Image (cartoon, rainbow, N blue to C red):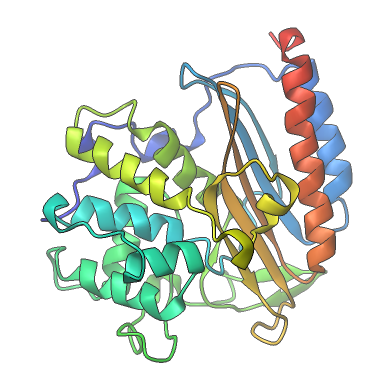
Length: 309
């Protein structure tokens, strides 16, 4: 069973990645933007922050350094989950505890991630390798503009595979404090936010019951917390829970310094708040404080949104 393209799914296509449901930024959102721009000033961090209401309309979008490339770390695994559920026959779905899919999603098991990518690729037609097939899904179905270059963790069946479209180059660099670094597996915050928009609103814009069930299964798995074992950066500043996936890389693993990423969806009342946050070269405590400021703006918006119209 091959995953279906966006047109076949009946969902809004990749072109909508840059469209808006509003025409003028409200004074409240403009104030929130100024506050967050001040918080992010001078830091190697990026943010795509959106509110989706219960009518599935986007009420605001605040973007800071949003088109700059950053190491994606493990955040992309959220989209591997959707790829799995759209590509595997429903009667073969298995997200139970201890399966590679579960370990990849809940505990960020890197070896298990390679297993899932390899297994799904065998169900997707074409001569491309497992990395290329996943990237085709990101580009052509989800509408994301970047993809993995490699996934070469020891023991993974994807070792030795690559996608030259996303190889590090002088154009594909991570810039930290004026220095350019060529790094594997870089995305933008806009990519992550687009992916979560697709997951969040996709089931409401589709004519396909198969797609709807795949999205619902994806949301359910991404909402499982590792609990006391591990809390993501967003969970540390918003203990009410979220649907998402973080990514952390120690400074010893990547030339840009410590990477702290987190992306997902927080539900407050009838609103869904999409947060896509990426950072490089700053401390984890700094990243947590910045995310705390973002979450505070959710409270600000909820308290004052009656004036936002």
